Image 1 (tube, helix red, strand yellow):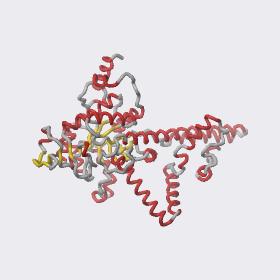
Image 2 (image 1 turned 180 degrees about the horizontal axis):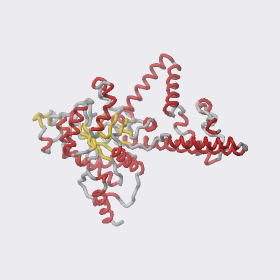
Image 3 (image 1 turned 90 degrees about the vertical axis):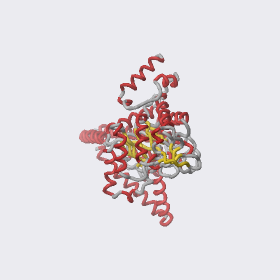
Image 4 (image 1 turned 135 degrees about the horizontal axis):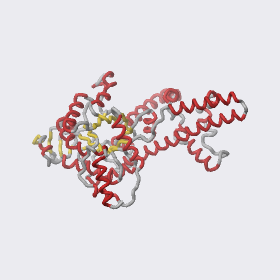
Length: 474
């Protein structure tokens, strides 16, 4: 297509596609076409993820997610039934960054770190998909070969039984829940690591790594802190909206319908960097700090005002809160929906809250459903990976130090129990990480007679793998 045809096609899409119905851009289709270059590069995982996440948000009451800090954690989340994965900047800072350091959540790590974790997670999910696909095909072929063996022996009755059993097995396999391994990833872009150009480049890197969505927060980038820390300094509306536009421009240039989530930390902040907007001016206290920052009246009223300002430029709006409070969540939702009916919202079910101190067990059971009814379509536990990793390892190490191998055996028995009851697969760790997959690669290259397969003759094959049940054959 000519330049003009590309521009007209993009303008038509923005005007008519339901995906862009409530999205405002402060740039033109001509700007996007001008910046795209001549090679139409495809970002398959990012595109698939963005479209799937949009569909889930459109069709589900809400989407639950946990924060993953390793590829294996993401695989287990999907295997257990979660439909989306959260990729937290806090967890990257704490133990999954390219700087190879342990940091607090203050944007101290290398800017490449979240894209690196996104790649690691997507690679792990892709491997899980490859293994699952291979195993399903091999299982089907094993049943067919068993049937042929029975038929070759001339046992017609057994042959009929085998055919019926094979069909039943195939039917059962088809009916079983098959994980959609390429779960959408929702990634933390912090405060953008700088200005609009930094945001533009960071979001591009995240899309290259396969993210479905990104979120940005309205703090000063150089002073960024976890939303549950003190000392947060907000940026003015006039500074944050261009960052949201930079994220959208990056996605448009790359041709991916990436979701943009706008987060405000105004509920728990009392400082602002600059005051150049009437919206922000209304909340000034008149105080100045020694560094020159303005004192502001933080709280839900300021959060609503800022959320309304960001809503036209974002797919979801997120207010970082200090405690799990349905009343406050309702107030924020009503404040946004009064001006933007139906606007999707996000909610951080944070480990920084002492949940049992605020809610009883009965309330916790329905807390997310009630949030969903208020419009909080994406709900996530940001630091689930960090706390699971540390708590489970401390528990094992503590008991192992006291009881030796009995403690590890108990963990193993728990794994066997999860395998039997829920289909947990990591107890067979060689197969889980792909030893069988690469045996299949070797077989494809050298034939079935190859003598150096990794699983053949392994302790896993001898002690963990069962033979095909007789009822499947006959």
